[in-house]
Amino acid sequence: MSFDPKVVRKAVTHLRTTDPIMRDVIDRMGPFRMQRSRRYFQALTRAIVAQQISSKAATSIWRRLRESVRPGHITAETIARMSVDQLRASGISPQKAAYMHDLAARVQSGTLKLNRLSQHADERVIEQLVEVKGIGLWTAQMFLMFSLGRLDVFPHGDLGIRTAIRNLYGLSDLPDQKTCVPIVKPWRPYATVASWYLWRSTDEDDSW
Image (cartoon, rainbow, N blue to C red; front, side):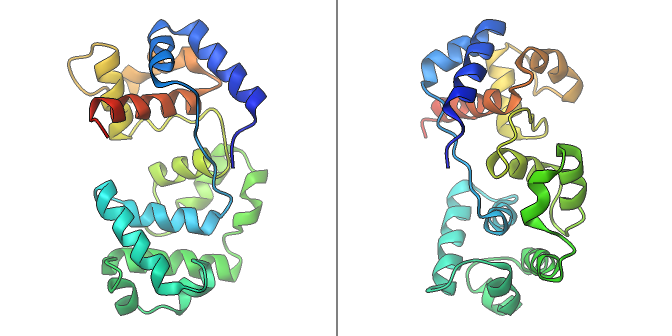
């Protein structure tokens, strides 16, 4: 699902106007094409799979997991029914299997109501998600951006984001959160859109 085109145009205009470096990135990268996923449980499960491994490995494991539940889909019910050994057969570590089972249990019991998260402010969404084993701030921020479509999220701990800022803004080291604050300030309230362009710039540098 795409973002509202009118909102995207407004966000891109804002970024181009307030930050000349971001304007150059936008000109180079082209239109904003970030997509949203409304399958909330699946999005969180995939984020757990992707933790601390390469994108290529995560894609391979995710594909095997999806194949293992066909003709069904990855839901709280299907994951809850799978044993740790069955999850491991898809390449998922025992620790991540435990995380996925905890997420499934919370959703099934109603402790975590994924379909209601869109009604809450960003901070409250993060508070609820980080109660799940294996879901930290970064995963919660990815959910805000890619599932709920929140426009002003800046994942300051993301390595790709920090690398892009270092490269684009001429820094000698990867920036910490304090260093990022004055750089990010002109992007508000569209830090999510700016972050997407930062990721894309890193993709270009790595020839992905």
